[in-house]
Structure formats: C-alpha cells, structure tokens
Length: 175
Length: 175
DNA sequence: CACCTCGGTTCATTGATTGAACTAACGGAG
DNA sequence: CTCCGTTAGTTCAATCAATGAACCGAGGTG
Image (tube, rainbow over all chains, first blue to last red; front, side, top):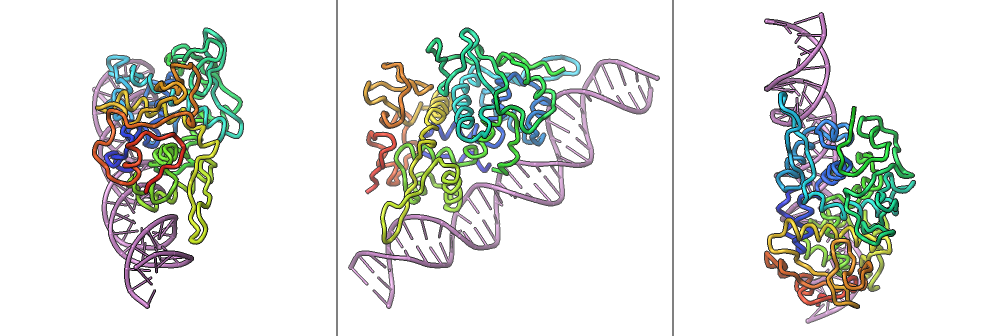
C-alpha cells in the first residue's frame, strides 16, 4: 500500500483506522492474534508473509498500541506480541468482516465458527450472542473450524493447533 | 496493494473479504456509497483518489456484487454506482471499524455520528441502537457531522453536502 | 464551431511488496 | 571450544501497484 498520510479523507475516524489496518496483511495478523498466535515465527508460518513485511506490520501495530511486545523468556531474550485492550476492541470489526466474507465470498462458508462459551451459541455478525442477547466479548468465545476450513490444506504448526477448538486470545500451543 | 491471490491464508472468510476490501481506497469508496455518493466525479472529488485507481476499484466492487452500475441518464449516457443488498451488508463492518478509529485514533473523536432515526439515538460499535436494543439497518440511520468533522477543512461538493444531516443511502444532492 | 462536462484510459515515475540470503544472540551436543 | 540449530530479525535486488498529469471521446451549450 502507498503512503498512510494521504488518507486525509473525510471520515477521519475510518480513514485513521484504515491508515493502520488497511495495509496488506495487517488485519490478518490481528486476526491471528485473536486466535492466540503470539510469536514471530508462528505468524510467519501461518500467514506465508514475507519476513520483512511481518516485522514492519508488527512494529506498526505495537506503535499504534494494538499489540504489546513483551519478553516471554530471558537468555536468549525472546518477545511475543499480545493484543492490548485497544487491540481487543477490534473484535467487532474483525467479526463483521469475516462474517460478511463467509456469507458472500467463501464458497464453502466460514472457515471458523465463534461460539459464546457460556451459552454454547454462535455469535451473529454484530458479535452479539443470540442466546443471551448481549455482545459476546472475545475472551468468552471459542474458535472452532467451520465448514470452509482448511482449503487448501495447510500443515504448519498454527494450522494444526487450530484444528481443535480453542478459547480465543489464549496462547496457542504449537509444540 | 499486491496480488489478491496470495491471501490463501487460513480464515478464508476474512481473507476472501480482504482480497476485495483490503485494497487501498476500497473501504473508503464503500463508506462514501453509504453516505449517498454515487457518481464517479463525486467519489473523485471527495476522496482525492487517482482517477485510474477509482475506476479499477469501482470495477472490482461491481464485479464482486457490492456495487451496481446503472444508468442515471440517457444521452449522454451516464452511470451511477449504488450499493447492492450485498454491499449494504457491509454496514456492521464499516461501523465497527469507524467506531474503533474514532475511539482510539481520531484526536477529536468521530467525524460522523450515526443516529437511529426511529429512536433518535446514536448506534453503538456493534451497530445496535441502545434505545430499541435492535440492530439498526443503514436505511434507518442519519449521518451527521461529529466533533472531529472536517479537519482539515475540505470544500468539495460532497463535503459541503455532508455538513447537513443526511439519511444514509439516500443520494447526496451535490448541486 | 469552439468549448465545457462527465467518465473514463494511458503512461512514465515513484514507492511498496516480495523472497532469498544474510545477521545476531544464545543453548546444546560432541 | 567448535559446530549446529533455533528464533527473530535485517538487507537488498527484482517486481508489481499506486500516483498524477495528460489525453480521449461522447455529448451538450453558446
């Protein structure tokens, strides 16, 4: 994508959001973060993204306060990227976009289903749980493969881990 | 943005959506369509987008069934671009992204406020009207300038028309 | 007939993305 | 101590997309 400055468009709110999130790969990285991906290498393996681009995007997301970079081990010092409160606030947007894509563009339907754990019900396009009628925050959701999952077939550690139901935001164990 | 094919990522639903909508300018064009912009020249004036890019994006949106291209006058034959049912389905995603941007990235807050006309209440980030508790479809919304509107100051016909409250999806009169 | 409008297309320049190769810090095996 | 493997990056040439200015064409209008 070109320059971020040029989005001097009108609805600054949306334009500002898109300057950050509208760049190629960025929203897929954020989605992976919701799924529990935290490590550089896992993002890399799951997204097939060029290393340089991943580094740039992670940095931008950290700068914007969407992700936090924090050490997960000393010696050798290694860092992981976790969603901040601000980052978790992107859930409604991500859910709505994914829902729309699943309904209109994915030939086999959505690849992931989001279930409100307390109710056992799938959330709708607004992120609301039809059972309890309230907005379902991501930490109360379970991610599970849907009808359109895994085509074409992938075999990286993240894809394998995501074949099992998994609580959103919990770190993904990629042994 | 580069290739759309490469988004062979996992969550096909979101990836498919982003192949179309994740390209620079595309979501801003769709947002303008919600505001009632329909003509090539109006998109051009309001977005400061290169003509070639606008033509490409409009074509892609028509191909994807998000916009419909239809004549609004004969002799000289001229066309306008209107949101289809599928396109109007993007409202929750657009609202969520704009809401997030207004909350976290826009220094003066949102530039546009969306009011549920039957209730006179602003919708929340999920697109739900807090007064009636139901999802507010875009055709029941009014767009109005918000606290962060119009900075920097713009003076094209669309910006001027949007300074007055306006029912969403209704064509914008840009005399 | 000259000129204006609207909706594009064309094209050289600029800038971003890509993917392969390289770097760096450290742990562990032999 | 040396070599190898792991993780997380950086560098760089080649490629691909965005930009913006100029051009085009079908109709009006004066």
